[in-house]
Image (cartoon, rainbow, N blue to C red; front, side):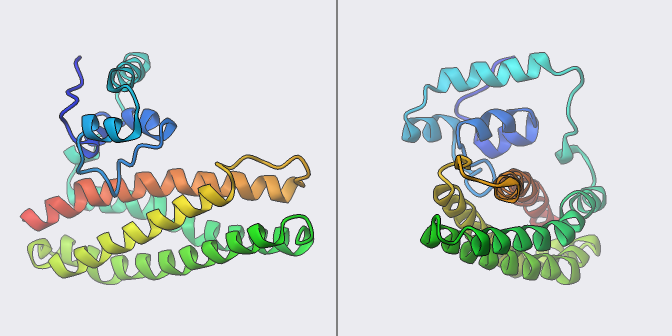
Length: 223
């Protein structure tokens, strides 16, 4: 199989879900920036596009079975998947990470006061935005789509996409503040767990936003 370098990274992530593993390794934005071609993104980042293609093809060859393609599933199943796989786990994970961020800042404030305070502040802003965002999706946008009113949902979808951009910026800032989630030598178990949790949150949100931006929202607007 040949991966066309002129395809957008969003379409590649949709058609070949395994490609997202490669994109994540190289920091390629396949969710909010999914409309750009692989060739363009690699050129901007100074990455050999041929290397990326080879790694995607290796991922596809190594897969024991094809991963679920959500663009082939009806919208009701996709929304159910988004709710069960991403929204409901965040109900528990967001408060857990807040508790750890506060504990690490309080206990280790003397070691790195400015950075730990900034991480907590950025995270609290992201948490508040995600909670509001999910509520609006569940109470307004998703019911519109399920009721066949997706073509009338341009306004709510535009708001959701803007909030996705904001969440993406917060994730990039957290990665910068944590030095790419490099665990400090003096870190306690809670500190380490916080870094791991934040990185896992980033990976999950990238997949979550990808499903909405690149599959659910475009489909809804066309109905």
